[in-house]
Length: 112
Image (tube, rainbow, N blue to C red; front, side, top):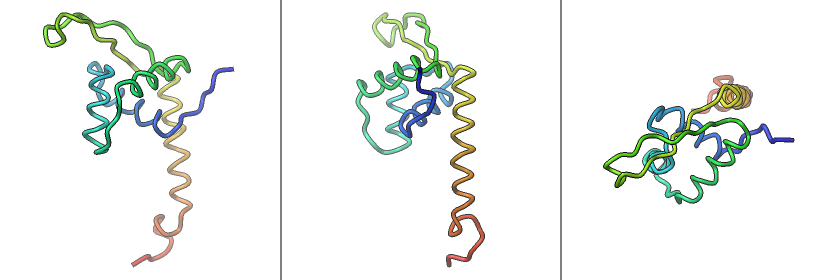
């Protein structure tokens, strides 16, 4: 049976694929991760996570056209599948439910 849950790192990588749209390839995803989190990520960790997400059915990939910026090499472009979008929504909804239950940050008590 294929695992249908997301780990936190997988969730973030999946979100970056959605954010980058047609520009979502491994190097660009790693670059965006580092830019937005301030944390380094290896290209190997990026590739293995993208492969795992594709095996789970959350992503699909296709080879893009060769570009001069990559010395004529093609990029493997990732897109989120319908299942991936559904899993992201479920993950967001679950986290928001938990945050809403946390009194100190839900507005239910004053933490000043």
